[in-house]
Amino acid sequence: MNRQTGAPQGSPPPAEPANRRSRRGWRWLAGLLFVALLFVVGARLALSWLDPFGERTVDRSGPVLLQSIHNLSRFEAATGNFQVVVDLEKDAAFLPDAIKGTRTLFVGAGNVDAYVDFGSLTKDAITVSPDRTTVTVRLPRAQLEKPNLDNKRSYVFAQQRGLLDRVSDFLSSSPQNQQELYVLAEKKIADAAVSSDLRARADQNTRAMLEGMLTSLGFTKVVIQYSSEP
Image (cartoon, rainbow, N blue to C red; front, top):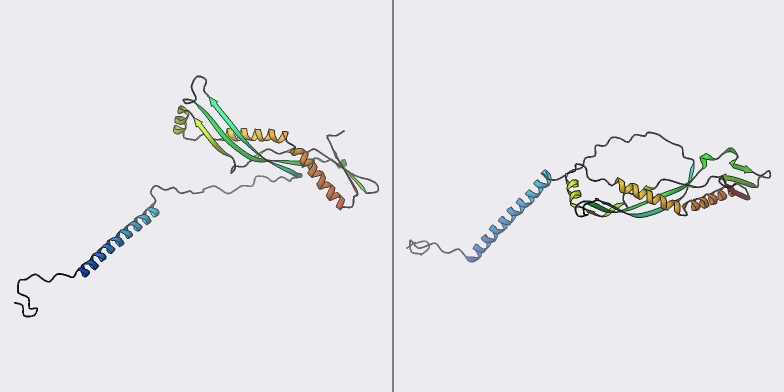
C-alpha cells in the first residue's frame, strides 16, 4: 500500500480527466489545421512566384521615328460614322462546305471625314467689292478622306470553317489574318460615304463657318461660289 496516496501498490495510474483530453485533442486539431494552412499558402506563393506555365508580355519595340511633317491647309467640315456587316464566304468547287470552305461575319465600324482643301485656292479665289462690304469666296467642293476603321469596334462576329480549313489553320505557323475583311469593310464604307449626303453637309458647314468669320470682319454680304459651277 502506498503511504503517500493510500492506493495499493501495482494499481494503474488514475485516469486523465475527460475535459483535459478534450482540450488536448482540440489543440492537436488546431495545430494540424494551422500547418495545413501554412502549406497551402506557401504552395500558392511558390507557384505565383515561379509560375512555370504562365506567360509574360515584354514590349521590346523601338522608339517611334518621325519620318515627315506636312502642313495641312484643309478644313475638316464633317465626319460620318459608319458600320457594316461583311458576310464573306469561300467555297470549294467540288467539295462540300463541311470539308472545305469558310464563311465569316465581320463587323466593320469606322468614320469618314469630309474636308475642303483651302490649299488649292488661287489668288483670285477671294474678291472684295470696291466699297468693302461684299466678299466673294470661290471654293472647291468637299472631298472624302479614306475610311478609318476603329479596331476596338471592328471584330469577327461569327465564323464557320470546313474540316480541311481547321486542320490547315492548326498546322499553319501564322494564323489567318483579317486583312481581307478590313479591306472589304473599308471599300463598303467608302461606297456608302459617297452615296450619303456627307459631302453636302461638309459644304454647308464650310459655308456657315466662312460666313460667320467674314461677317465678324465687317463684311455685310458673303457670297460663296464653287469652282465646279460655271
